[in-house]
Length: 105
Image 1 (tube, rainbow, N blue to C red):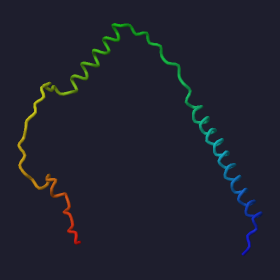
Image 2: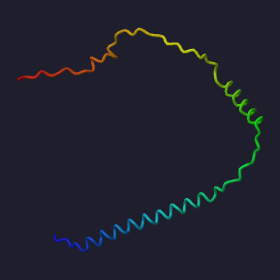
Image 3: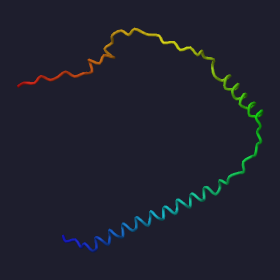
């Protein structure tokens, strides 16, 4: 079976160029979708609120009081109790090791 390399290269070139063209078209389609979907999200002008120091302090205090009511009161003392552990084969490392095989010389 003799292969005609001219036809093979033409088919490969057409396939490669077709893939590149489809990718370029997909890029333009995706950019178009991006513009369509972001066109609906017009930024509304932000409301201008003139906040003075007293208003900021009142808001911060209200938030602090609200958060303190939500959480339980906890003591700030940390205690560490030592527990004497008895021997257990579950935590023994020696049982996880495999024994060495006997070598015959």
